[in-house]
Image (tube, rainbow, N blue to C red; front, side, top):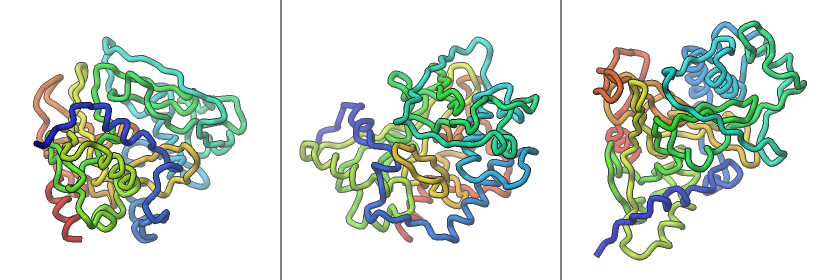
Length: 326
């Protein structure tokens, strides 16, 4: 008789090795094409500009992919940043600042004060948020124990997480289901569901980098064990939002960001084609690797889909069918 795995920590432990130096594609190469990278970079730059990441700030050489992400994190986490990205948070909503490690073992990006000014990583009065030159900008770290499933903002200046206990988000590291499994709801799978053509089916997706490790762990379970797949949905108790974390097979690793030991992945949708479980008004939040859906009030229904002719999007089912046909 088949047994459903009840230990929820299994999936978390399964993907514990979640950094660029520990998880590589099976052949150790970057499977994205140069043309695909260029298209994705252009789409990402457009999204960043529309979201405020490059709004009226760049002088000289524009921000590269790595700098854009650091700039986004800074503007999300600092209310007094120039062109701050407003994250809705009522005055009565609880949150916690958690200091993270700042020793030599954590990945940092060194940036001169001049470069910070050039890309707009400054406060509202155009002063810099640090006196270091060059400054250490701390790359995003894994959320601390007790907050793995919470929405948060990352501060690259102080190496801190601002975390919201009332906002639940499914960690993307847990979204390891094979093609055709977990379509907008809870499900379960076995190793056999990954199929025999794993190298081709998941090529170019974020799941490709972890697939060998995932399958090795699944095969160590008792025969017939079925691994649970969470629905992917999270909620907010203080804001009119819902959060949906996509499957790793539906997103890609941002390969335009330089790799380094211990450096966490940043995810994006391939070529700007967003995969959504249901229609609605949503934005992509790369800090938490989730879609942020708007609702009719706290705990209310999702707002109807907004008309956006420039946004290509696909249902999870149609994306899976396209993966199988490719």
